[in-house]
Amino acid sequence: MMGSRFTFTGRLIVGLVVILFISAYMFSSTLMAVTGAAVLLYLAYRRMEFHSLTTRVDLRIERTVLEKVVHKDSPCSIKLQIESDESIRMIVSDRPPRTFIHSSGDISITGTVSPKKPLSTIYSIIPKERGYFRFPPLGLTLMEARGLFTREMSLHPGTEIFVRAAKKDIAMAHLMSRRKQFEITGPAHRRHTRTYISDFKSVRDYMPGDRFRDIDWKAVSRLTKLMTKEFEHETSLPTMIMVDCSISMREVVRQRAKLDHALALAMQIGIVMHNNGHPVGLITFDEFKVMDHLTPGKCELDDIVLSLFKLPNPVETADYPGMPRRYKGGKAEGEERFLDTVGPFLVKGKRRSFTRDRTSGIFEAIRTMELLEETGMLLVVISDLETNRPAIMRSLQMAVKRKHRVVVVSPSSWPYHIRDTELSEKRLERMYEDYLEKQTLLRSLRAGGVRVIEVDPEERGELVISGLRRLSQ
Image (cartoon, rainbow, N blue to C red; front, top):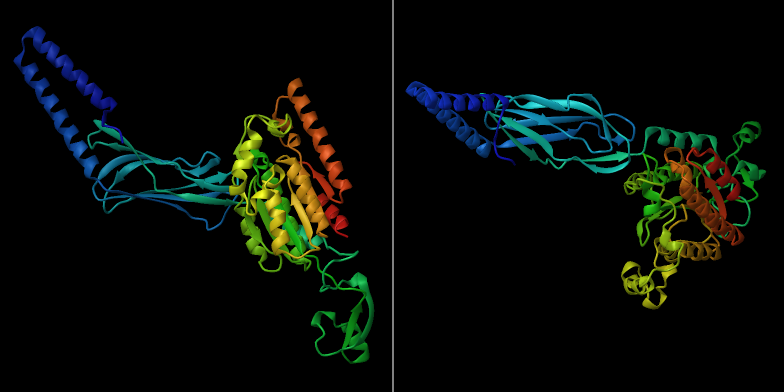
């Protein structure tokens, strides 16, 4: 809180007092001197009274998000209300988070608040990013009743807002689930529980215990008795979606982040698989640890979608991020010793197993699956493959050895920022180096039995779902 200051009117009166005192001195006028002293005493009295009022006044501020669910790129309404135990005039200026755009309504209001008459306004803002956001402090300018002084202060109601993915991404995911069907073929390393029309073999008489969905109603209408369909084999494929939340995925240049794209793709994959009868789970991880783990068949689809909505916020970057330089030029001085020291505190396990390629989030995620999950799952890893690449190779090789079908959906950094970045020769060379190194990694992954789907910012899920359907067979 700052001390009181003169307004423009107050400064004019102070100037008038100065003129009166100068005139009284020059013309030896007692009346001017007395008038100036009286005005000066009045200003001092009003300032003391205003200071006392601003010190004892009790302001209660409520900032409420009117929508129960807030989505990216969709307007949301904010109600701001100020109550006071005494009458005081003020100017209230609210400030939404930096990533929000003011849409409509008065974000700044001026008026007199009293015990029986609160001051309120409703305005709309549009979030441009997904994640958790906290509103900055509210700016208040308290005004003296005669307009002679003001006092600025800030109050923090502690308002938080949780922005979910854009409605169009959710709608696209549900649209994909109606248009795409996964038919799992090939050797399965788990029990069969799911039937498909393409595997139809014959019909037989109904037996107690047969599933209601396997009854052939056309045969029933002709034969006037219950008949059950038989299939060549019945299978379902548990699917684990693994989302990389490392800093390279969260980097954003001018509102473009790979993590937000990964969220939309993961949501589409999860809804499509769930609607086709395949249990779906989720693992999110960063550079060093597993952030969330939901087991297929033991969680609801809503749990997975909500966990995706809670992924970390993007981090704004001023330039093309690309792959961290420290992974290209070898280990920095003392880096290996540092990792050996802090490694045991970052992941769970025995100390002797903590080498650099094991001190990573993706390795911890694969090891968690090895301990808690069954074999023969479909692993969909959504990652840019830029954080600790030795750990990526080792971890995915472990998953293949455990009889999992591993599919990597991988975006590259440069297409997400090339439109908004000035292309210098040095930047182009860096992008090309990143591209060549990543292609080398992808060739190694393919040679090791890992299927790879490369995506760009324009991919809305159609190519990924179609490719995933083929690769999962």
